Image (cartoon, rainbow, N blue to C red; front, top):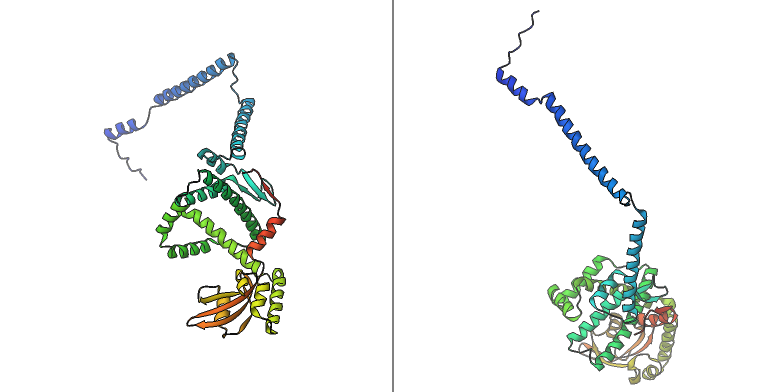
Length: 359
């Protein structure tokens, strides 16, 4: 079978194809040029290294130089830390440079049942709280730079150390008891507080004006307060720790039910400030006392005595002496149980507390 004739190519298409394909000669020339350029660069580099070597300069990695540079940087860092340490522990400086350094390096001011590395409060925390105190007093028009003001500031610093110590004790006990507070709880409490205080903008303005706090600073405070409240509830509701107080209250109630005079028993035994007046609290209305006390008082008839009533303050025996409209006149006997403050006092006495500078 005969082959079909090939389609003849036009002259124009031949020229186009010729232009599209680089000539072999051009390729060779380009390759030589690239090789020549690489060789030239290599010679320059080799020549530069050769000249450096001729001058006695090493061109390879210098480990000794790296070690020396690292040692110098470490020495500089240690000197800086030491200098700021002197400024903090000897002079108790609180200028901007010291604040920045304290936020980077956790210089300890005290430790509770630990050492400088853990269970400690830092100088940054101390400066933050001190700044808040100073801001508050300044906002109230009090000058802490006068002789009287300096004396007051010294007292405030002592109170601040007690506060930081209590924070450590509470935080350690909360961790031991696995007490936690979620972000949701913090946000809910913040929302409640801001609604009662006139809105978020008003709260933000007040925080900045009185304490120099941001909203986030305030939320940190809220979180700690919620942890403290949960711990307080666990301590006050611990029957084993409150057994002695409860037994005493029950014994006093037996004496009253047997005919002993309520006022005389109150004067002799009550641990409330009302003891001197026979336990008389006067007229109270709903919302004035804690719920447990209120429920018991408003549920009694005139002249009647309650059983032992447990509140966050301890164990009460309540007597209603009169009723007027929506108010009741009551007397009570209080036997204090273990509350947070009593517990904290015990812990302070037992704890190993170390302060790293004197005021």
